Image 1 (tube, rainbow, N blue to C red):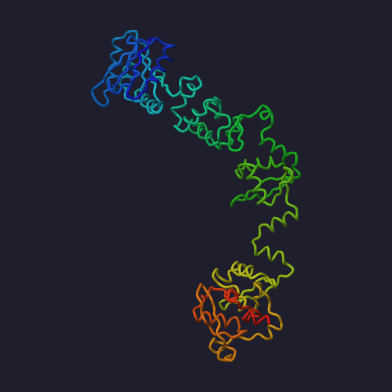
Image 2: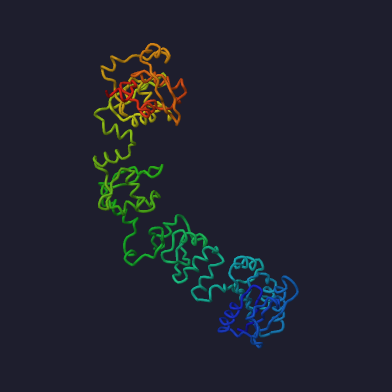
Length: 495
């Protein structure tokens, strides 16, 4: 075909111009190449060209004068060149619709070469002008006119820039495959091993995806593995589909099929199960029911649902495995009671004038005792478990909690109503000691062997400690010993 090329030199670099002229010059007879732009903006590579082919058009009339000039030159060529059959426009603008319509009305074919960004919008505008689709051919100069990329370019009007960049960056792996939607086949670009996100995205942008992506992949003889979509090998194509294998497996073992509950997140599903079924089929069953997406997630579901995976098979847990799983699921307090089940007894705990019956192990660690009371919501986060133990007629020794012995119960006396009364009654034994707390030192009266509760009231009344402080810890930090719910000076208790 006899062709005339028009170049908008204000937004097209020279290498694109020469590449386009070379490419289309192999197929058509190019009679003239008009390069249109302001003289001061023309690249130096547009100088000293073959004047029999190239013509520099200096447009100097303002901002959009190049577009206006190009339209006028197209009209002039259509009128003055009777043999003209093809008009090639090279530009990144889209302001040539009136001239394009004029050329089509005169039965001229148009090839519009641009950076591809404006193609979608241009197609919509051409449709509004009722121009036949075959009259205007759009080309993207980024494609280097490679046949494979030329084939890709026909999808560009329906693809977003992100998908264009993905396929362009994987041009060396680009393939074209046919997928089935309903009863029809459609061609789509494809890269073997592309992420399922990109595959789903291109199918949606081409309006082909119906239903779930994984079903669409399987229906089109592709496979999803570790989040990527691949071609199926000949061996895989020859094998029955996982759905068919699962159905055959349950049919062959109908007598062993049972219903089990599978837990995933906050959801519980009721599914068929055969004790000892292959893990591969189990994982596919979870995937097909939208419970778990991969093998790792399937193992977690099995564990949470009290199933065991051994030798790539899935079993109901044995009694030992169930006991082990139950133990691992317990918190620290429950594990302690579980380990000391034979020693557990029920006692009453007094706190804030209320009694609560709780399990107890004689000699249990004070830390476990405190967590136990908080778990049972008997004391708050800031309350002292030592004080609660003392008020509940328990003894705290060496950071452990004990039931009072018979001797301790016999010698147990209720502390006096006030600290002053106690100090007056035991005036002969009163001495001054120093108590350090929160970096400060306080001098207080003390009677060796005074009740722990009285000592606690003394420090509270003197505002040395707060109500949430552990009196046992304060005593230990000040070289005092708490024994049998009484406080002693360390050096004297051991004499």
